[in-house]
Structure formats: C-alpha cells, structure tokens
Image 1 (spheres, rainbow, N blue to C red):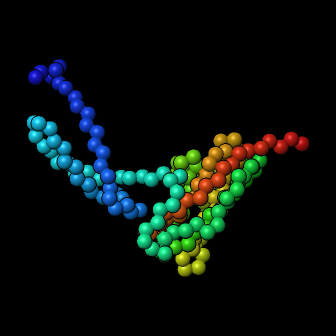
Image 2: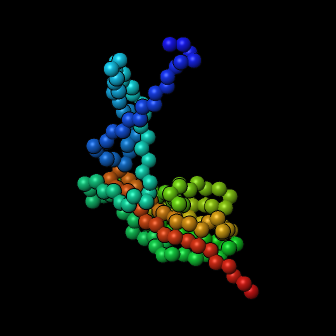
Image 3: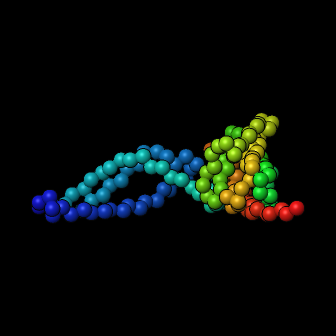
Amino acid sequence: MSVEETVHTLLVLTFEIEVLSVDLTRCQSCLAGTCQGKRTSKTRLNVWMTPSCGKFTFASDEGAKIIEWSHFESEYTLGLKIVFQCSAEGDPRPHITWFKNGLELYGHAFFMTHEWDMGEKGKKSKMEIDPATHMDAGYYECMADNQYAVDVKGFSTDFSLEFE
C-alpha cells in the first residue's frame, strides 16, 4: 500500500468501571484486537464527574455532607458584591469546590473564595464576586468531597436593574 492509499481507522472503546471511587485517575489497560492481531495499550485514565450529578456516598458515615448553603434563587444588583456560602462536614475534612454552569471556578481579580476550618471535621467556604456584572448570572454549585462521599448543592442567580 502506498502512502497515498493509507487507510485511517478510528476505534472508539467503551468500558465500565465496576468500583466507583472519588479518585478514579489511575493506570488502565485496554486490549483491542482485529483479524490481523491484538494490541494491548496502557494509559492514564482521567474521569471527571460533573457536579450536577448529585450525591455519591460510599459505605461510611464520615462522608462529606453539605450542612449549610446559599439554597435560594438569588437576584443581585449589577455593580454590587455577590456573596455565596457553603459549609460541609466529614472525616477527613472535606474539600469545597465552586462551579458555575458546570465549570469549575478559579480565582481572579473580581472573584475570590475564602475558606476556614470549623471544628475538627468542618469546612466553610465563601465565594465573592465584586463587582457583579450581567455575565455572573447562572447556575452555581458548591461541591464538598472527601474519600467517602461527594455532595453537591446548587442555586440560580439572575441580575436586576435598579433605577433611581
């Protein structure tokens, strides 16, 4: 077969993971075969769960659980500060992550998060957007996770215009 006659084959593989854990990133093997032979390949698998999928719990009472959150539809005024809060408990102490419309939020000049420990098993996170713009409207989620559970709470925001 000449270079011009090269045939490209795309193979899409799907497989199930039997044991679900919060940390699914590990080395995985895949065996693929055709009538011309077999090939085994190992690769690192990164599995990302969207936060809107709810709560995952694994046989433990120590799993992360959100105990307080901004659980109402919030209307904010353009140009002012928006503040959301989320508190969680678990053992080990949970990690709290913020999402907007399914995407993880990272700090920048107009967006900040503050976290502090509460007691031996708790964590509190406060997210601030200052100043608020029309682009800040959306669906926000607070996700708390530790090795035993993932808990998610969400709420919608929209802006209002104030006229004097």
